[in-house]
Length: 459
Ligand code: ADP
Ligand code: ASP
Ligand code: MG
Image (cartoon, rainbow, N blue to C red):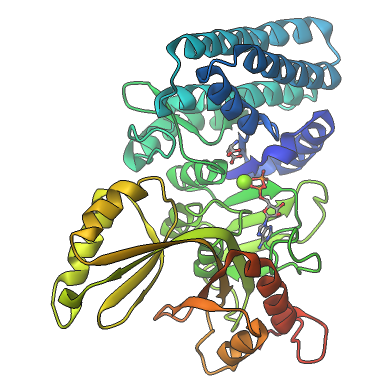
């Protein structure tokens, strides 16, 4: 079997869902399990609704619920010719919107928002889109069957960023998906959402539908995982920042994973891990151009000095200086324990004899973290920084890639630089306003057609 995942824009309106149906029809011999995101913009709208409502702006929140209702019902009417079906499915979808409006009302009375209630609201996007997609597929004679992802994606209770429980998921996936697949039907489920073992709704974090697809694929030993999105595949840079970014037809698991972690939003950073563990190839395709070559991510793709450039437009740098660090074994462990305690993961790290600088992926628990770090030495925080990463498995294989990277940066100020021992990533912390120009210059140096560029070979 294969997993076929459609992102938000790939189910964003009736025309997109129609294209998705055609893609799935072509995949039927491979026995697909279909995973869908919320319609594009829906998750943002739902999060805004929960925030507005809890701040007491109920009228605005309810108005947004109605806009979303209209968007889903319109798509349904455009996709399904049979009016009885439109009425029946429309009534089901509408009941969810009524619930949503009631939830918003409850939040406005409560006057505060918990991560748990936000998940309950955000999860509606995938529940609605998956039901809509099932109706559209059936209207096209594709034997689709809705599966509520919360019955399969069992997670812990870290609301907003729940961690999947792999063994429970494997068991549930076999129970819920396999019988449907065996009968030659197509399970359709929502990405991004899950539930605790007690049945409370959770989400995997923004962009988490890719991760769902990969977890389901690993659970069922899929032959392939296909991520259908709005660009031709993984590109040499984000095409929104570098319009002439080029398609990477084959890329290694470790490079794709690194790119995702350092800002290439085309894949959720955790997507690759379950696939690697089971050796399942991951493909990225453009749902608007299904005939394109796409990207194949595997362990044995060619090893290039530089495969792509990624960036995170903003990050927080924390610097700790401490004389106690000098020749003191165990000091770094004390520091890392503090980060672990505050559930804060580190992106980039650089150390000297008496100082350590790190960048934080998520500064949510920063204040509490700083209190504990100050007990170890002088601490300072730099906001307004960004990260640019040059990723390539052969970065340190003796090519001149490093020298070229630094030359391309010109006079941009580098606050931190780090190269992993496996030589897969050169990561640079710059002033936030330097991130875009640096990315463009680096891209030009490695992939541009200009003299000195190395289009295609990136040597
Ligand atoms: P989906 O809704 O299908 O999950 P996303 O918006 O999450 O789509 O991810 C696709 C977007 O990722 C693209 O539109 C593109 O702007 C962005 N992106 C960032 N870096 C890259 C890259 N290296 N290759 C391809 N796309 C990238
Ligand atoms: N709908 C969710 C989001 O917008 C998950 C996803 O699209 O992957 O973050
Ligand atoms: Mg995405």
